[in-house]
Structures are given as C-alpha cells and as structure tokens.
Length: 417
Ligand SMILES: NC(=O)c1ccc[n+]([C@@H]2O[C@H](COP(=O)([O-])OP(=O)(O)OC[C@H]3O[C@@H](n4cnc5c(N)ncnc54)[C@H](O)[C@@H]3O)[C@@H](O)[C@H]2O)c1
Image (cartoon, rainbow, N blue to C red; front, side, top):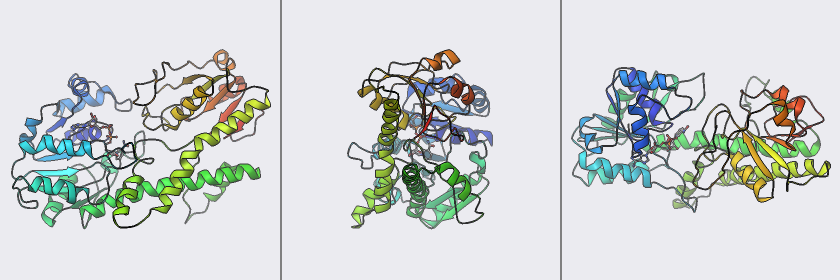
C-alpha cells in the first residue's frame, strides 16, 4: 500500500485483517514511525485497530526497495489541483518513479487515487512499458477508485462495492482476484478509463446537487421559506428524489477538487463541463453569502464584525471527523479575521488548529460552557458535530448563525445562513 492516509491506511488494515501480509509505504517518516509504535494519526481509526493490524502482519516502511517483496502494489497518494486549478499528478508520478527500479515480473499495480479518464493508460502504462515490461503479460495494471467515507458507520471497506477496470483482460482478472480478497462485491468495468470516469461521475453528481440545493437555499431564504422543511417534505417521495443538504460551502479532499480533473481533460476533446463550472461557482460563493447574513445579523444589534467576538463551531469539513482539508469553516474564519473580528473556534475533533499550507491560526479549541458561550457576540455553526450540546448553546448564546439547519424551530437568537 503506497500512501498511508485516509484511503491507504484503512485499505491496508483490511488486507491485514483477512490474513494478507501487508507492507505500507509512505514518504512521511512520522506516519511510518507512529504506525510502527502501534499508534494512529487518524482520529476515527483508534490505536487498538493499528495494534491489531500490526499483530495481523501490517508493517510500515519508507524503504521503497522493499517493493520487490510484494505481489500487488496499490497507489493511494494525493491528486490535488495545481495553483491554476489543473490536475496535479506529481504525487502519482513520483510514486511510480520510486517503484519502477524495483518492479519484477508478475506484479499487479492498482491506482486508487481519483483522477481523469486516461491517467492509467496514458501516463502509467507507457512509463511501465518503457522498462521493457509488457502490460497484461509481465506486469498487470488496473484502476480501482476508492470510495472511503470517513466517519460513515453504516458502511466499511469490506461492504462498499468496488469498481475495477484493467488495461487488458488479464489485468482485470488479476484486479478482481485481489479485491475479492477484501471486498464483498467487486464490479468489473470494461476499461481503466471507464473506472476513472465512474469515480468522477459519483463526485460530480454530489457537487452539482449540492450546488443546486445551495441555490435553492438562497431562493427559499429570499422568499421567506424554510429550505429544510422543503427538503424534508420532498424526501418523503419514495422514488426519483435524493435529498442533499445546503451548507456554508464545499469541503474535503474530493468534492471541491475532483470535478475539475474532468473539466481539464474535457478541454482536450473540445468540450466544456458547464454543470461542473456552474456548481463550482455557486458552491464557492457560499462562504460570502453566509458572511453577508452574519454581517446583517450583527448590524441588527448595532454591531460590526470588527472587534466582535466570534466563535466558529465545528471547523473540520464535515461532521464527526477530524479532516480539515478544504474546510469552508477555515475560509469563514479567514474572512472574519480580515474584517477585524476576534475569531475563536470550538471543535472537539480538532483540539489545536493544525498547520495548514495556506492558513495560520494560533488557536486551540474553546471549551463550551454556558459562561464561555455567553461571552461571544456571535456563534457561527459551520460544522454540526453530534458532540455539541445544541440546547445549551441556544440557551446561552447572544446570537447564532446556523449554516447547517441545526435549529428546526424558529428562535429569537438564531439566524439561518
Ligand atoms: N479521503 C477520502 O475520503 C477519499 C475518498 C476517495 C478517494 N480519495 C482519493 O484517494 C487519494 C488519496 O487520498 P487520501 O485522502 O488518502 O490522502 P492523504 O493525504 O490522507 O494520504 C496520502 C498519503 O500519501 C503519502 N504520500 C505522498 N506522496 C507519496 C509518495 N510519493 N510515496 C508514498 N507516499 C506518498 C502522504 O504522505 C500521505 O500519507 C486521492 O486521490 C483522493 O482524491 C480520497
């Protein structure tokens, strides 16, 4: 398993669980050291699970020469966007460079990282064949997108069906054999490109529908209609409607980023991805819309953001996880700070504001008590963790800006945003 992050680590643990000797590779020596000591660095994966994995044969290393020991190589490294919002395949290609000197006949390579259609066939395959290996005969190559949903208690790695596409029939057969060891239902598709586009369709479907419901929220708000009441009512339709919920903007490593992999690739075919662009525009404007609501709410109290004490509640990108990537809460904190607000946050999943590439806040999570809540001018609910005592917050807050529809009943001190 190469890349022991949110995707690679659970997958590696699952292989160990079924008795497959598993080597985890990562370039981050801290992660390898932590795992070797039987500890976890991902909050929803406990130390006990890592200890169990170790006892079942999971080993972590930074030594890529050990690639020659393994039969299958799964690549789970990041696929972010560049500064110009174009696919950044550098992690995948660097991984391949580290692997290539140690490849041997008979090995299977599976790319798991989300990417545009053509990556496996156009980027990985020629590099492997440049070493003199024939893909489908000497080395087997597949793409199988990860569907990890951190914090989801209903589904786990084993019970989430897995799509797989191979460069050749022989590749696909090997891929199916591998994934059937750990997954209840493996779904073959006809090519690596089909598997790559499947993952993008899933994420674009979410991005577009979230964009739609965010637009509906703005319209409903202007018309004085409760969008959550409307979604609840629409969701009683037993067919043809899937509920999506509005929020302060898109977050996480997938939904704000992956659709633009397709946008980039579609240009090669002279096509524009209009739904993706529109949803991206609406979703990325949400923090500003929330901010306008907050400014108006303060204004009603003859206050400005400048010098107000503002507590942001929940700063990870979604509820009940510690993942901060692309969190809209952080963008809200940045805007508030720029306007001169005194920003604090409370999030039991993020006790200390982490080091982020583009954001620096020297802050720790504030403990929520009736007294501490009453000292803030505004409580901004950005992420609705189950942990919070929402009734206690309601009873003691001067003003609440609720971006998640936590409070279904109207209340004097609550503004929906
Ligand atoms: N997080 C999710 O819920 C999720 C879900 C589905 C798909 N994905 C996709 O899976 C891929 C991985 O995402 P993630 O969330 O696990 O990322 P992550 O950042 O949590 O983990 C990536 C790991 O790869 C390591 N790494 C980076 N370069 C490396 C290299 N050259 N060699 C070895 N290790 C290297 C990093 O140190 C890190 O530990 C991405 O393409 C992402 O889009 C993520």
